[in-house]
Length: 140
Image (tube, rainbow, N blue to C red; front, side, top):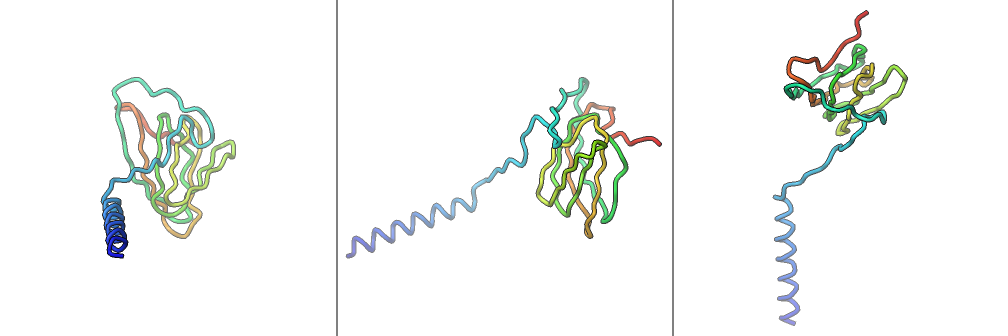
């Protein structure tokens, strides 16, 4: 009987040790890994020139539509808060919720809009070229 109790105690002790180690373990989640943008188009090659990485935190107020624009460089982001809808001129639409990742369209006119009642917050990473634009707005 003592051996059974001792065995159970050792099993519980080991399980507790493994569980405690998991709490301190580094965890990596791949949010997105893709060779295409969200609309299914192949991403272009990287631009030539001196690389320049830009990271923006963008807050889109409730009930706001951003202007029509395009990105001449590859970019990707993660929506931290709220909801955001992205629509291309061809009427392809993507709806994002907090936690969703996006590989944005390149050289394609589109806009984002926040139809919700709370601000949308997104972090976007741009792989550009030093001195080059990362966003081009439509000129009317």
